[in-house]
Length: 309
Image: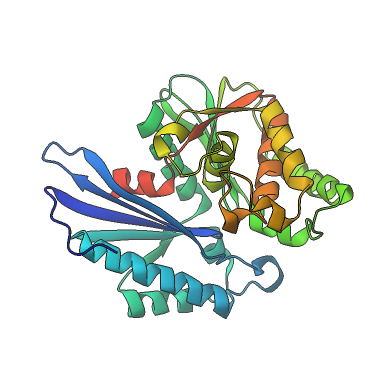
């Protein structure tokens, strides 16, 4: 961790406490109100592990998450951050002991976490993608997380519809993809459940553009490009076709979790849930009739920065 960093401009931080990972974004704001990113960091803590069975955050996941948040607070102090805005998503919406976790985080780190709705999560994703790309046609933005998927239908005038579906890569992995390597029938069962949930939401097949954000889509892009080191500039705006996604799914499903960890570009801690995330995206593409999707490296933490500060 760095010593005190001397920078010009006021510095702010946003934290996204997700079901699978906790993300930190630090940016400085100049006199004209524009933000420049300083640090973008992600740590996998599996806060949502086992939630679909117990509805309780496990002590192990809590301690891992608090350890990461303590480190994030030290980093923010080193960068002279004047304000931290933190939000919690699906795991904290579901867990019966969310309040106790939030209280413990506040006590041990000074960071106050706000639990946001699925609709607010979708709105922040829209702000992030719009800031990164600009949106000029009928578009569907999807954000695949560990505990849920956010869907945002929008055009150049704004958001037309947004909602959240309670399916995520962590839950699907724990509930359906239990073998190592997975069995074909497990994949079929997982896809059936995903398709049922997505089709029940009445997806609009008349969209002109499909944009994906979140850890799954960015990691799939890193794998496609065989990145030895993650490079946001190469992720932003890249494209994954349905054929490329199908090939990646075949690659993941043919390997054990330990074998997947050796795949170039794959974040090792995501090796067990990457297949479930890819299956979710495949079903989204199937239900919307899209042959490819565009990747956004901007996510909730960026939308939060632009919205709150």
